[in-house]
Every structure is written in structure tokens, then in C-alpha cells.
Length: 240
Ligand SMILES: C[S@@+](CC[C@H](N)C(=O)[O-])C[C@H]1O[C@@H](n2cnc3c(N)ncnc32)[C@H](O)[C@@H]1O
Image 1 (spheres, rainbow, N blue to C red):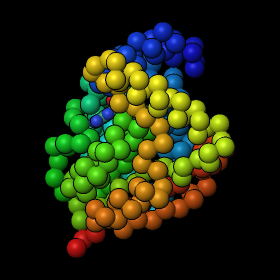
Image 2: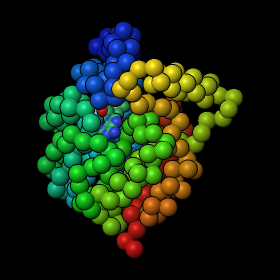
Image 3: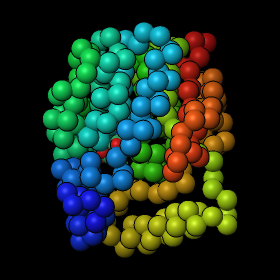
């Protein structure tokens, strides 16, 4: 559908009718041939920004998928980079795809829920890409509290997001239409596939982070082309 090696429309439909975890297990071998993987153009730009933050010890990629951001983080981290994801299939792909990633930091792959991570105050940097749509809006405060809990004081949470697109833009209505279809799907079929667009946007995400003890910097990092609407957010956990 997106690429000769990517999933067919039928495969995507079957995946969307599975749970989030099972859907990603099925999609895993073909995931990197879909537009759902965060593009290197975006990750490279974020990597350049992370280089300005100085030496990083331990890094965490939340909802790491096939490890795209782990590849970017590894040369920037001295000690270890952990990827956490709910899907064992995606983690297996991540393990394969990051085996030749540049850098010397130890790579670890943890199966777990972003809303209940098995870590405590141990990361200098946490990132999350392409996955906010899997966190229900009602769970965003819990998610942000989890990120704060796993970072060291002074640790950073870095991600990209955008402002709400204007009401007259096709993107707005496409996203609203998709969300409506997912609500119908989830009211009829169990277990749910949690995936909604237009979540964790600015300025609400910034306010939520500030309320959970972060100092937040939002910058236009110069993303280009289809990603020009993205903003780079660096949220630093206050030391108290
Ligand atoms: C669209 S993929 C993004 C993968 C990768 N971060 C990237 O940017 O290419 C979303 C990932 O989030 C994972 N995921 C969804 N809900 C999750 C949760 N509650 N906890 C941990 N991982 C989750 C999925 O298994 C999937 O691998």
C-alpha cells in the first residue's frame, strides 16, 4: 500500500481490528516501510539538538517501535539506551535493526507499558516519537507523571509535536474522520486499538508538563517540507 515491502490494505485492516499490542506485533516486520515510522529527517534534526545538551549518560526511547530513535540516541549516550514498547514483535525488530547502530552505549529492550514503566529516576534523556496517539487524552497526566518519575532531576524529555491544525485544513478533517472511525471500531470490537490523532498538542502539552514539574522550551527547529509544522519540545525536570 505505501511501499512494495509494506503492508497491504487488507493486512492493515486486520491489524486495526486487533488490540494495539497484537496489531503492532503483526505489523512489526513491515513497519519500517510505512509512513508511521518517524522519518530520519526528523530524527536527524532532533539528534543535532540533543548534541547541544552535553554528555548524556542513560537514554530512554518510550514506545520505541523498531528502534529508529534508539539509533539516533546511541552515539549521544555514554552508558546505555533502553527502548520500551508494549509489542514484543516491534522490540524484536528493534533489536535486529539497532545491532549495527553507531556508538558504544549498551542497548536494552524492555517490554512494558508507557503508563507504568519499570524504572525510577535513572535517565538523563527520554524521547518519544510517533506514539502520543496511543495515549488516551485522559491518560496524558499519568503519562507525563511517569516520564517525570523515570527521569533524573535535571533530566530532559524531548519530543516533537504541533499546534492544532486550522479548522479549514484537510488535515484537520482527515484526522477527525479517522478518530471518529476509531471510536466506532472501539465501541464495537474488543480489545480496543488505541490510536487517535490530534493529541498531546501545543499549548496543552506544555501546560501539562509544567504542571508536572518541568521547565519547557518550545522551538521551531527548522523542520522542512511536510514536517515544517512540527515544534521541538525540550522539557527539563526541575531539580526542586
Ligand atoms: C507508530 S509506532 C512508533 C514507533 C517509533 N517510536 C517510531 O517513531 O518510529 C508506536 C509504537 O508505540 C507502541 N505502543 C503503543 N502503546 C504503547 C504503550 N501503552 N506502551 C508502550 N508502547 C506502546 C507500539 O507498540 C508501537 O511500537
